[in-house]
Amino acid sequence: MTGFGAASAQCGHRTLRVEVSGVNRKQAEVAVSLPRVWAELETQVRAAVLEAVSRGRVNVSISFQSVPGSCGELRLDEEKLMLLDAKLRRVQELCGGEKAALTLEGLSRFGVLEAESEDAVSAEEAWVAISPALDEALAAFVAMRRCEGESLKADLLGKIGTLRALRLAMLEQASGVAGRHRETLMKRLEEAGLPLALDDERIVKEIALFADRCDVSEESVRLSSHFDQFEALCDSEEPVGRPLDFLCQEIFRELNTTGSKANDAGLAQLIVTAKTELEKVREQVQNIE
Image 1 (cartoon, rainbow, N blue to C red):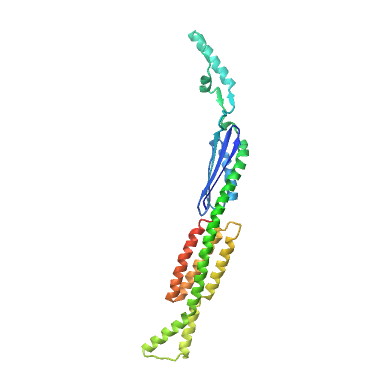
Image 2 (cartoon, rainbow, N blue to C red):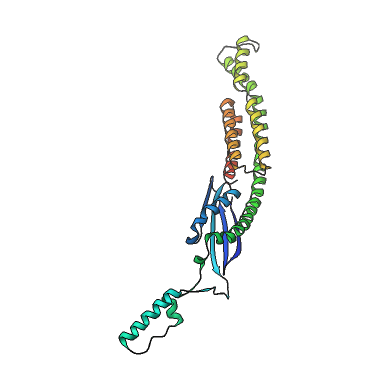
């Protein structure tokens, strides 16, 4: 399911920004983007995400911005300053004249005076700020996904209700298949000039065998059980995407078996309608964690 969450935290003289976004995926995929100097934190970020998410592609972006009105600490490289001063004195000796003045621009250009950046913050220190911000962003991300999940749940339960009604219609249609077959058989025998009584042993045996082959009561019971399990999973607090996907496969299998045993145009049409509705369910289940 899709979702988005964001949070901010203070890290030194910078504001840390964590954004978590996700789109539909059958498996769990995590992509992490953070400053290169904290690359070693990717494993920890990924682990935190996978504790909260078991399905979907999740993108985590971690960035830093300077706090307005703050320039951070300035670092003076005294060793470089002494070397630079010595070189300037040598230039004065060789060329004569006055010694060149050291300006702030010059000190910055030669790397003597620098503003501290995220490089000055170790990965361990950065994680102290990242961890709670990541938790907050993940909580908002999961909350948005849960809201979407409630909408999907209502839609899925409605479609399962439609499939239940189709199952009852299939049972009713199947109950008359043997009778219709008997009428068709007697009519064909009569047209062929071979009239037989309804209680003829051969007729009774043929109808009994046909009725046994066309009996879909077992498939109907299993379909009802699958629907019950589907609805129960929809009320679960645990990740149910994969179990629901499996149930869709089993429902499709029972519909296929029912269709192959039907030998009836009306029942076959109900099977086609049920498969069409089930396909809509399967498409939605792919988006559920």
